[in-house]
Image (cartoon, rainbow, N blue to C red; front, top):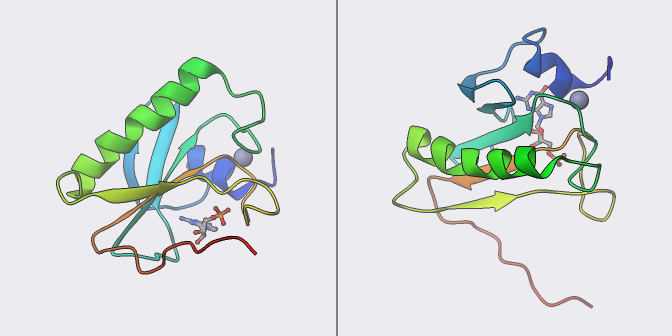
Length: 115
Ligand code: 5GP
Ligand code: ZN
């Protein structure tokens, strides 16, 4: 995906504050953090979202990387929330699969009942 910003970050064509990287995933700081710790983890290979034919081994590694990132960011003991916004109703804005890792303070918003 030549016009995908997260693909460009994965290829080091666009700057990002990288937290962790290996052959298949990369984690970097969100440019608009919602909590003191706000890191995004993505597969390097483009997938639009979690339902876009993601290999199960890669999916497992993507989520295993959450605890790696939590330790690197120092929130493994205090806790954090992981979020995977998906599609329009999920308010996904960047259409390259990503896991948000949010922590460093308590989540300010709790979901209420649906109408
Ligand atoms: P979504 O709403 O798609 O789940 O979240 C996309 C996230 O990507 C947002 O939190 C937004 O701040 C972040 N983001 C958008 N563009 C960039 C960028 O160019 N670099 C980085 N590091 N984060 C970005
Ligand atoms: Zn992409």
